[in-house]
Length: 233
Image (cartoon, rainbow, N blue to C red):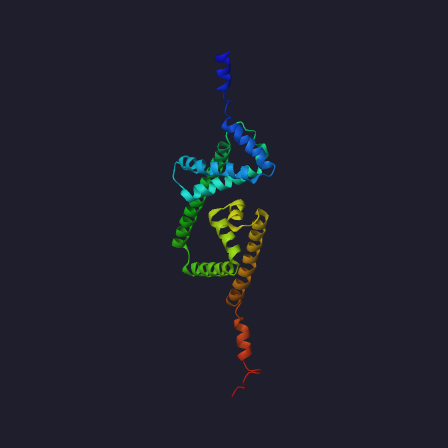
């Protein structure tokens, strides 16, 4: 009896597994417990960026990019938190989202570099075989295009610049500009329409006088000729 009582007195309940504890915190976060979500957030934020850096084998991005990728992955996990069943620890779920985001960003980066290379190569080839006057007209056209771009608001300029040159997603732009995704999309579409309108208005206003047809030679001669021929003799 003494041995049995001793065993009962020293008995400790089993510890809850980390994934089970994360599942409980996720349920609490779904019910509106902000402290539970902050606990999951801090734990994932300490571990996931280092794993994302290891997954970036080509070292395309830097430490701040890994942090941004983790933030985006956490936002997606928070939006789909009800799908988390506790089969693994929460930070592994975040890492899965982060790896997908990393892969998509690397693909966009490679696509941007390839397109930039092709554009530069095409520009070099065209500049070697085109008329200098045509190149001058293209430069003038690009000048009016940039003028139309700089007529936009600062927010619209930022959205269009990152969207066109870096293929930044609407979600990332919304996170940077503190807007919703639909608002960013609306800003982008309205900015493109404004650029088209301002470009056509400025370019056509300057180009129309240059391309206007010259008066015919016969008309000029008739205007300068006398009304009746001079008499002979």
